[in-house]
Length: 463
Image 1 (cartoon, rainbow, N blue to C red):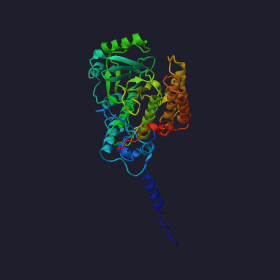
Image 2 (image 1 turned 90 degrees about the vertical axis):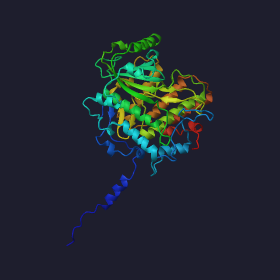
Image 3 (image 1 turned 60 degrees about the horizontal axis):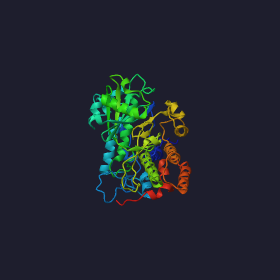
Image 4 (image 1 turned 30 degrees about the horizontal axis):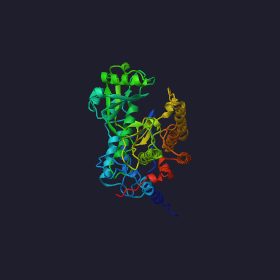
């Protein structure tokens, strides 16, 4: 009779070899740990995940993404964006050829990401019974500092000035830096809200430092300086020092604070302090002169979001006008404006090993609008944008939905049209309204960047 042949799996083996050869540039790890802040993490993630350089879209000519072009006669040590033509930018963001970034630039960014991810460091583990030691270790500390010890590194404490406030914390100008101070882990409510926990701040800290990697090597595949730089992160414990109390009360006299007086914190209150570069004025208080400055603002925000999308599947998810800053003026093709994007509390990012995101389904009040906002129209715009995000994400916030960035770009155009006064003609009004209609058709900032509205603002730089 016919002898049965052993099964031959050669075709299947070849098929899976072919599948394994693909670079899954757009695919992200599936989340495993879902909480208010979501972080996916595996014990051996460092070995299992592709090197960052192979996960990011490949660079056509080894030149970075967006940097401001400094004036020719300037002896500037200012970081500058490198503008690029649409074709070249498209290549940076989209190219999926076989070559990957190599050399020092590759090693530098891989090293940076390893420093940023808890999964790559065995001593730091998201599964700690107490995440507070992990937060300390990630900030390079074995024990908390005092607020005064940290702030004294940046200025004479008597010169500290409060700049603003939010539901979860206070913002102070400390020397040439801005310090965001967030109370954590306490049993008492702060400004009517439950205090954030160490695990929540741990993810926000990691996200901020991940975005810092975009400011790196000029040879990086995706680079920009649009996101505010995090200079240092510190965990503190203890009461507010009298100089901070004075700064808080001075601001309260001028602005009628809606926050609780910090004297109410217990002696052993914990805080996380984000020490950030000073980005300048927020968009609400900044005076835009003309249509050119408005276009400059928009193209810088769009380009920054596009680069972060390509590098880290980043979605800001809370880009209202308090969180876009105009920095110091420079003579640039950006018509003298330098834009920084700040505050990543609600953001979503893929570090290459973990997905970090805020689970907005745990905060239903966001979809009704923030409390205490007297500007009803603005309140409605913000709440409507949150509701649209909920539709896009289907309330599954760990997923990648770059359309959320477009929703905030639509919001920003609305704000510029409705709330900002600048010199513009009826033609300019029509152009912005046309932009808004086209934006509504895009699914990412990367797509929006190539809109005709921005075409003449992108200039090739010969390397």
